[in-house]
Figure 1: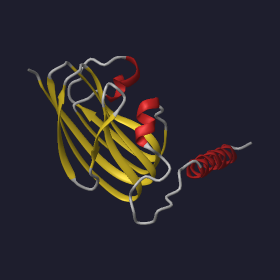
Figure 2: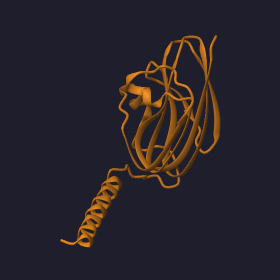
Figure 3: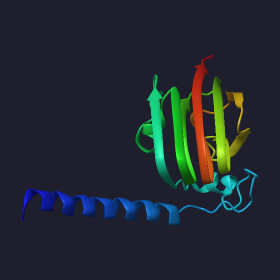
Figure 4: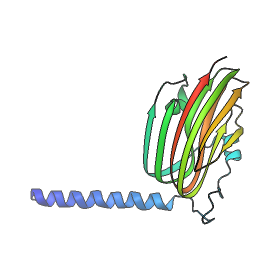
Length: 176
C-alpha cells in the first residue's frame, strides 16, 4: 500500500473515533429541561455533598491553576490552588473545582466570578462536615467570607446540566 493510502486510512480512522467520542459525549449529558431558567433540575447538590458523589462529563474544557497549595493530599490534591479559571462548552454532573485545607479559627475568603451562557448551573461551598454552607450567585462576582470553627477541607463545587460556562475562583486564608 502506498504512503498516501496509509495516510487516508489513518485519517478516516481518526475522524471516525473523534466523531464517535463527540457523539457519546452528547448522549451522556443531562438535558436542560427548564428553558431559560438556570436552576438545576435533576441534580440536588445537598444530597451530593453528603454522599461525596462527584462525577461529571465535559466537552471542550479549559483549566488554568496557579498559586500556593494548602497541603491537601490524596482525593482533592489536584484542586488545591489559590487561583483557578475553568470553562467548558458543555458540562453535566458535579465537579469539585477548588479544595482548601484550613485550621480552626481561620477565615477563608473566596472570590467567585461566573458567566453561564446556557444550561443549568449552581455553585456551592461544602464544609468539612459534608454540608452545603453557601450557595453562590451565578452570572456575577461574589466574595464569600467563612469563619472556620473547625479544621478541615472546604470545597467549591459546581453542579451543571448541559451548561456552557466560565468561572474564576481565588481564595485567601487569614490566619488568627
